[in-house]
Length: 221
Image 1 (cartoon, rainbow, N blue to C red):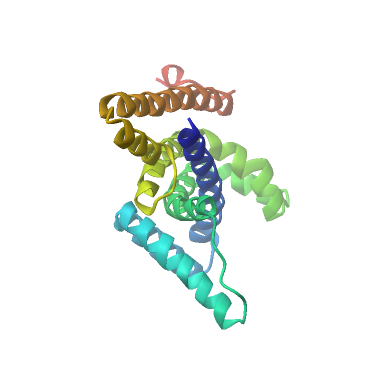
Image 2: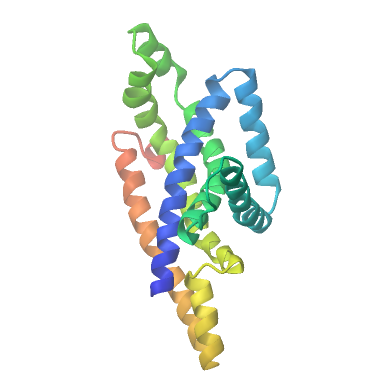
C-alpha cells in the first residue's frame, strides 16, 4: 500500500507537470514564432520517438548529474535530489510531449468563429484563454488527457529500474522475501485495476460535466 501511495504521488505530480508543459507547448506550436514552433516540434518528436524507459534512464541519471555539475561549476555543493522529485520531473517531461499534441488538437477542434468573435470584442489573450479557449477545448481534451493519466499510473512502474520505491518495486521485494510471487503480483494487478476503475468513473463524470449543454452523440446522429 505504501508503494501504491508513492505511485499515485508520482502519477499526480507528473500529470500536473505534463499539463503545464502541454498547455505551454500547444500554445507555442499554434501561436508562437518560427523558432518556438520548431523547438516544440523537436521536443514532441524526440520524446514520442524514444522509448520511455530509455528516456527515464537518461533523464534520471544524466539529468541529476548535469544539475550537480552546473551547481559545482557555480561554486555550490552537490545536492541529493529526491527520488520523488526526480520521478515526477522525468515522467512529467515525457507526459508533456503527449499533452502538447492532445491540447493542440483540442484547441484546433474549437469552432474558429468563437475565437474570432472574442477577438472582435477586444478580449486580451489571457481573457480569451480563460473565458473561451479552455472551456471550449475541455470536451475535446478530456478523453485524450484521461488516457495520459492512465498511462502515467502505469509508467510509474518503470521507475523501479532506477530503484524508486513504488508499487512494482515494493511488490518485487515482498515477493522475493516471501517467495509468494503469485500472491503479491496478483495483488499488485488488482491494485492497478482498482486505480483504473476509479479513474474511469471520475474522468467519465468530468467529461460529462465538460460536455454539459452540448448535444450527445445520439442526438448528433
